[in-house]
Image 1 (tube, one colour):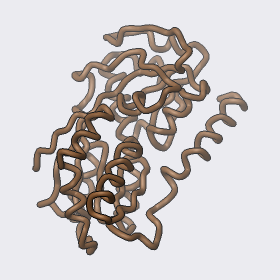
Image 2 (cartoon, rainbow, N blue to C red):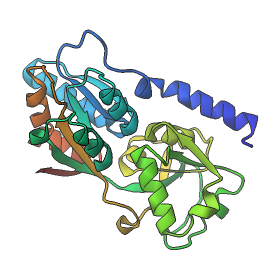
Image 3 (tube, rainbow, N blue to C red):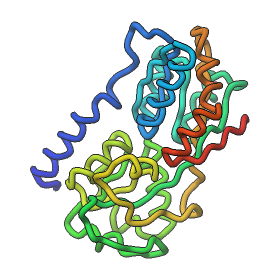
Image 4 (cartoon, helix red, strand yellow):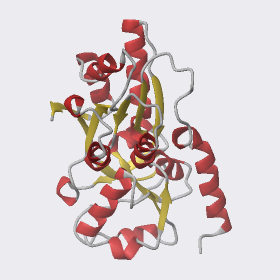
Length: 263
């Protein structure tokens, strides 16, 4: 059983990240409404500001785990653009006829890393059978939900591939999105966590212990598309702006790999 202190810490993190996962876009949106993976919060906010400066138009952004926002769209939430942190949730909406296939683009790539609090001196090399359970000790591994949230799905796949999943599967601190997992480590409530490389770069409270080998999990791809039935006249222009040189520079500075290849 988790300790009362740990449960309290998780509750604090969930409250602190409620704005990411609980809020659908405001009712009085002035432009296209974008539902995007939580790991895009910082960079997409910067890109929306750049678009506003260039066009004078406002994009309304709503962030959560890709699974949560895909389900919101499936339930009729008023989104114009969906940006997922994996192909699976975009494919899920595609299969239900809820995205405009012609607008779909594989926008970005990323990596997953093992992080610790910034003052930790833990070191390891991520390889087959690396001693993750020993490194955790009595602590827990912060990770996004391993059954639904892309960062958690990638992380579990990597741990299984490396042969260390069974040793840590009962020592997880699962969260509703990757930013919540990051916050647990940044606050020192978890000794280690698995997050995207871009999340680690954005948070000075953590340091990267090691990067997971690319071959240990499926390629990390962020697809974007218009939601079927979007009526906002500026949605298509904002989606196109995400592949512009200006946006590409901001994505690159944030640590993403820019793909931009249309399906």
